[in-house]
Image (spheres, rainbow, N blue to C red):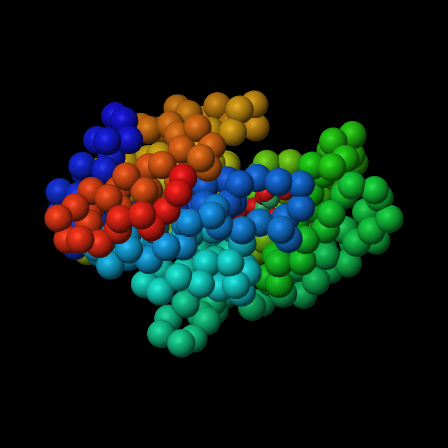
Length: 266
Ligand SMILES: O=P(O)(O)OC[C@H]1O[C@H](O[C@H]2O[C@H](CO)[C@@H](O)[C@H](O)[C@H]2O)[C@H](O)[C@@H](O)[C@@H]1O
């Protein structure tokens, strides 16, 4: 399958189609500073138009919902944060109830990670509210030290370790992941397309295929886990190719309507 076939699958019955996208590495390029991630230029405008034509356009991310609300302030785009345990409903932020009882464990883990790595150059502890992540992108030599502390914390707190690109997150050990979230988002719809780039996207990529939809993997060279490429039906090269695909999809959906021209310079 290629980009055009993917576009055709969504355009066949757009009102019943779901386009669900990961944030980091798909809509935002990967960089050194997790706090600096932002939508690629022009993407907000394209997503706005896609949301007017497709049944569902959603962002499903490991990022907290509060972060997504700041970075993806796009009318019509549904937001699902923290691997789908947080979402926006009307004017309210919602979170799965069972998450709350893990907050003391998350706070303990966050404190321990700050104590262990707060003074370590290049290691960044990311407070995600209902989870905590530790990054070593700027200090690759610290990977083993991080792994050792995280293993102790998993054993001591019962939290679950969620590995990603040069990061590991400690989060509540619920039977919830991007796959269970995608099933909820896609319920009752026709064609489902999910695009992701990291290990946390694997459950959603598999569910997309199980539902008869399509799994899109965004490749970032050697940082791409080979397991993702095994699940992929379409592989896009980095966020630049995502931008081209979304622009082409917008053009296909708006063809003949007079909308969509000159909205985005890829
Ligand atoms: O589910 P996602 O939207 O893909 O979020 C996954 C994690 O993304 C962020 O980390 C990654 O992107 C950073 C910015 O480019 C990069 O510096 C880091 O190395 C990557 O792992 C985010 O910081 C995590 O909280 C997300 O879980």
